[in-house]
Length: 623
Image 1 (cartoon, rainbow, N blue to C red):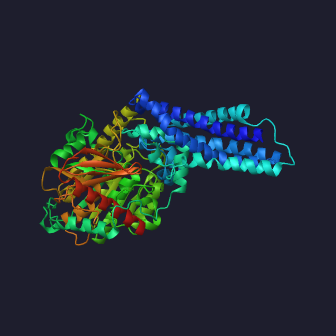
Image 2 (tube, rainbow, N blue to C red; image 1 turned 60 degrees about the vertical axis):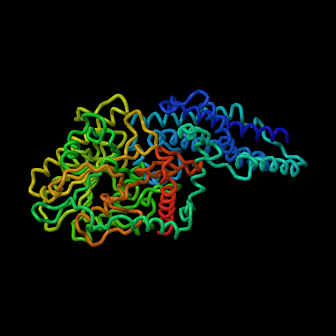
Image 3 (cartoon, one colour; image 1 turned 90 degrees about the vertical axis):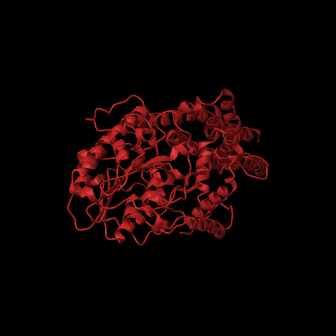
């Protein structure tokens, strides 16, 4: 009996040691974030995170505890199952730990439900990493798994099996009783509330709290808390939330009284070309108060058209950006990241391409990558896109030139050929580039193809992207169709590169370009209104005189007098308005004000924000 007890204790300590080492590796791998923590904060990462590490170790020790109780009847079988279980569990947990560690620099959140849709297309995940990174990851996985398995069999595994005894029933019962005590560390103690993210929270610095989390615990929670039919927000009743949004929208100017800045010089219907830039922020655009000299072509567009200097993305990944721009639906907080992950709900989206198709337009989408990634093809089919061109349509020599697909120069060249083809209907066409997607592998012939740091690789990709876009726009500018073309340049989301990175909870981590140019743009303006990428569809319907447009209370016009934007993360949501900007952490139920904490409008704006967030997620659950 004593032997069984000490084996269970040793097994539990084995996993606890593993997770403490994993935490060290996480801190070392993310050294640029860790360097911003003081020694005392690093110590608190281990101290406050210990409760979650104990819980994870307890979960992984549960089955061995049950098998240990059965070992008094079936010793050989029980201990063989424990060994096999450990040999399987350890590599799987190591895969989670390394995946979480590797994703953090890009996502700045620990592994959760948002990773599941990507697992349906593992090849697309591999395209985000370079070959050296992939080889190092595989080597790290094999090394860590082998070292800890060796440690387990050398120091933690029971050297001999328990023999049968006439007291087997008693011993088995007592061992099961010991195993049930694992419930205490599982739930985080004897407190009324079970262990959750708030239990670990200790710092105003998000990274310090994130570093304290346990990878396996986060992943296990994501698996067991994936009920997307339930609204995670309950600030008021659904009817009250809708009433707040409706009353606010009623105070805005009606669409027919808003200015019109788009009109074809030759009287023809306006062609609309939407350029979606991958991972692009205003930080790299000089004319939008960004870095000097990287984007001369985009700077020229800013100077000759309409530039929105305070436009924000609703999320931080591509699916959120496509959802906001094309499905006219914001990103989400909690378990779901965007509506694009849910085919049954996607059917009810009010798509921007569908709006143009209803108004007699040819509709096209051109992309250098794989359309199967994150339900993109399904979205395009449901939205009524007529012409789709993607990686598979390029020659193999071009399609395989980078990990994600055809580099920008080939994409824009093909797209220009398509756009300039004579047609009888007006055109709404979307082009979505890939060269600014990590790992930023540019064509070998590009003089920018090689760089020593990730930041420089990203900046090189930005410069390359701008040059390719500029060549495309120059072709359009020289054509007769330019006179009746509206060209919109925006982004799906920002990039946290280059260094120094901005904090993912801050508004500036979501500010993207929104630039209108082309012969159909009648004015040169710089608009400092706070607005969102979700506002695009409603605005285009008003500017082009469409009778029908999305009527959701979640949307507004870019030119309206109602100036606000929201952004969403798994862990919370943010509001930006002229009077205040805040981020609410839903894991810890805390508000961080970036400005306006003492604004006289604070309470009313907070009430509006809560109504918006609640209505959005209520609407999502009801679709």
